[in-house]
Image (tube, rainbow, N blue to C red; front, side, top):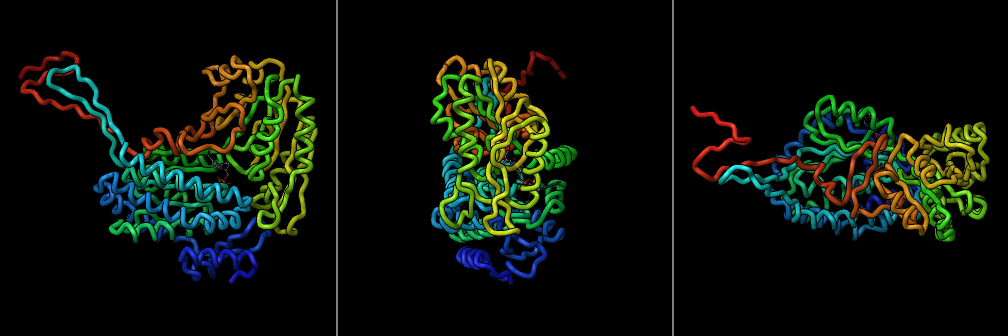
Length: 505
Ligand code: NAD
């Protein structure tokens, strides 16, 4: 039985979710807290046989669930949202303990889950089709949407529960079942969410067994989900390296995938920018969540006329921002997830120095000893967009580049393989509209006078190029969880053929 004050805290939180304490010990998968490196639990991984059974059960559950009217499915999601509201502080704290996010970000993640549940409840009465004029007399054409089947959700460590909810809330109201493979680094929050869903299911009554399940494990169990033909949609969130493998494997069996992969997000600071607002926005976007958001600001492209005013201030923020334990004091930057993340950060900084970069901050900070990995955010002035600047390093490094013409800034912004999020700071309408136009940002998200991170659930979320092209959450992202069917209906007594074709037998 793991013993540390954080492990005790986790045990009591999970017992409030009615997670059996026996599941937290004796297993082969060690779950560590990035806060101090202590072991929180030793949990058992799902065997391949058990995963096979869970996918089969999810498929059977889908066959029953799709027959329930969508607004009733919405009622189930409403009850999940109620459970999340009632347990927001406990689940938020568990996110903090398992991932190391500061308290307000842990709570914010749960709020995001509540928001998407609310959205999905409304959506359950709005899964609209179309009526299309037919070219043939006494004919009608319609388009309608049907459920897909089992939706497999593979999620990353950094949003251990919100990513599941973006997918599951929509998938469930759309009439699908959900099998979730959370990150091997964050299975405890997944078990807590599964317990809340079970509670909602008891209140709802009649939810088919296996409608939502969790598979605990790493890459192997993920690949089993990816390769199973009964899984109609695979929604995978994580690194581009993972997405390349998953995308190819799903395509090989003609399944549908939704890929939400890495970002290398930039902001452009134009001469007309409000620099106080810019400084605050950049600090949050680049240093918040210890640089471990897919939408973290990683490149700042600054006009030469404001460079000398803004960049020294940013370097000062990096040198002075509070780095520390998210459960002690009021630090703004918590730990990196593990030692590999710190090593990747230090390697990127070495490469940046070798390419002529000037590094401010970025050093390791000893907060809780050798087994945890905290780092001061780095601001790195770069002569060119080369080397580590075109890669995603999942740590708080902000590369700064200087520009003269807005076209040059946009070319730099677009000049990386990833295409998730972007933003521009300024008050010049022409520059802003150019940035938002077809000649502007090539990203899935383009913001004005704010950083690239911190999306709301109402919009479609996702990005282009090596970010994978998937869209989740708001707008019409629900269509990815349904299949489109076109219907042509003849209500007359003759048989006119399309395009005037005649065929008289
Ligand atoms: P990761 O790619 O290491 O792991 C993500 C998930 O994929 C884990 O559950 C892992 O077990 C699984 N996995 C890995 N290889 C697999 C395979 N071959 N088959 C099936 N499953 C496999 O990512 P991470 O370190 O957990 O998260 C950080 C990355 O996620 C960053 O690149 C970040 O930008 C990205 N991310 C993207 C979004 C987005 O919406 N675009 C959101 C959050 C995180």
